[in-house]
Every structure is written in structure tokens, then in C-alpha cells.
Length: 113
Image (cartoon, rainbow, N blue to C red; front, side):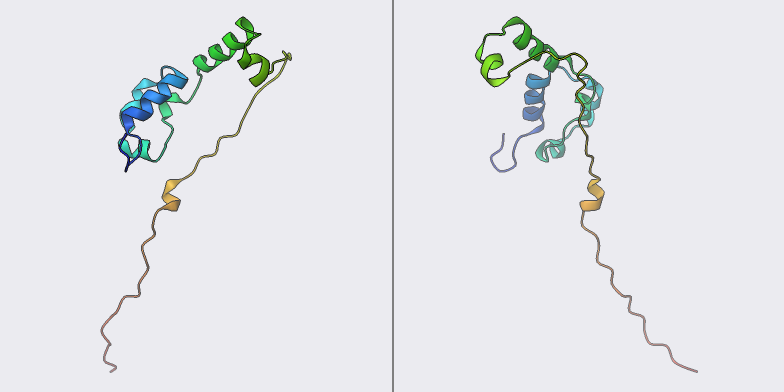
């Protein structure tokens, strides 16, 4: 990681793989650039079904119910029929870019006849 530029592409992808596991669509990582990493753009390769987070939560809750993570930090009571959803917000970065200044064109004066 460069102190002036922030995390690089390799650093971001390594961190994401640690938390989310293998990407759902690894072929989409070829378009992930240094610019994406420095602007904290979440790669499209991880969008979709992710089983690592689900398995991690299930292991914590079902296989070690008396540990600190499930007793104090993550209290759990099983409720049937619960559906978890969230909204996604997408920004069009083209709207935030600089807009060129409109200038009046100067034409030479015309002679009146």
C-alpha cells in the first residue's frame, strides 16, 4: 500500500477475498483497475450469491453457541420465515465529473449594407 495513493488493486482484492471468499464471477476482475481500488469501487465480480458469509455465520451460531461472538456480540434467536433484504444505491459518476464552461463565441462584426 502506498501512503500517498492508498490501497492498490492487489491489496483490495486480497482483503475482499479474505472476507468474501472466491468471487462469484472471477472473469469480471480483469476490468478492475488501480483507479477502482483507489476510489473504493466494489468489484462486480463479488456481486451475487456469496456462501462464505452464510457459512461463517452458520458455523458461529449453530456449532459454537456459547462463545463470545454468539453470546454477547451476536445474540441469536431463530425465527422462521425471516427474509433479509437491503437496498442498493447506484451512482452515475458521469454526473459528478467536471462540466466544461460554455463560452460565447466571438464573431467578427458584420458590415451592414
